[in-house]
Image 1 (cartoon, rainbow, N blue to C red):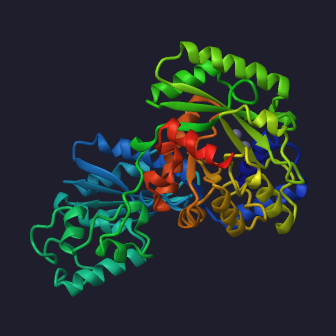
Image 2: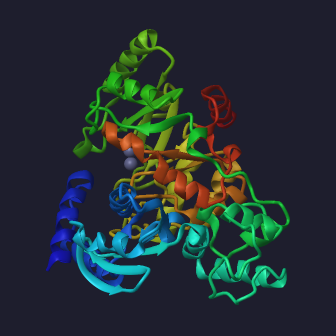
Image 3: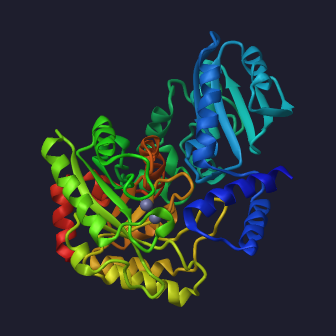
Length: 456
Ligand SMILES: [Zn+2]
Ligand SMILES: [Zn+2]
């Protein structure tokens, strides 16, 4: 069926990137997809939702449109795309939706909401509200059920909620609250960013004034993991540097593959040295951007690295990653990664669990032990911002932060448009409560260099 066909297509893509896969793996992939139902990765759902948002935004009756629910919380997998619209004629606004190209069928509709099935699988739900109730509708549709319940309980306790949790403002709330911001304020809470409205400890933290200042896209000063034509990327070194400069970055690291990854045209020691010379020449003529010479070195089956230490020592940035031998048992895989962590030249562990969202589970690695080793050695762990990966996930990134491990968000871009995926990794970082201090690519290159140097 369609699902299977889609899966096969993706498997073919995987084949090209990762080498031979067994039939058993393909079947397992299809089963995993079936179990997950109609969820799609955040990176797939966001552009679809943004497109629908753009369709609604231009309608004369519409004042505001915002993503809500799982999307606004930036969950890594999304089964329902929710949007909230503020407008004068809800019926007319909602009537536009069934005609959109992405829509397969209407599941339900009422005066002020419509639920549709999208061709790509997930459900789309659009809630319409009068402008004065917009913030409330958006707020209720954003947090997890637990978050909403916790905040409403607090509101009831403070006498802010008169008609019970299901009533709508303005009748039920004390007059004067006109935004989410004000609502939290009236409850004695600092503003809780949508990404962490999960009903865990954020309400307590907001009450005690100890919510962290979450990292922002504007804080990002560079990308430490990009590929060029020297291995399996499509940009020349100069194109990569110019594209990063156009994003306002201060630095960008080219980390092409190492020699054993022959399917990706991995670099031998000789080609690596030639690339290094080209990088040096380019840096002499480049303006504000600094092109860093990096390497994504393969962690081999026994935990040794694909290039000698003397060669790694010549590079500005060394990322060690696993691209083969995923089916080792947990002890082997964990020890393999820890061995790489302990190498004094390894600055970063790339996509540490190897998972592909909705398609391949993480390999059997004990992240607790990896995080412990990273903390002990001062090795940075990556949030790979590729829409297929988002690896580390939010839970592991949070655990790493708690253990004192520094994180980097890298796009792993193989082409220019992929440099724009930084925001997806940022979503993970924000869900993990990370601040500028936790993220090395929110620092200057000088500061990063000093941090890396503490290890080697
Ligand atoms: Zn990689
Ligand atoms: Zn890579």
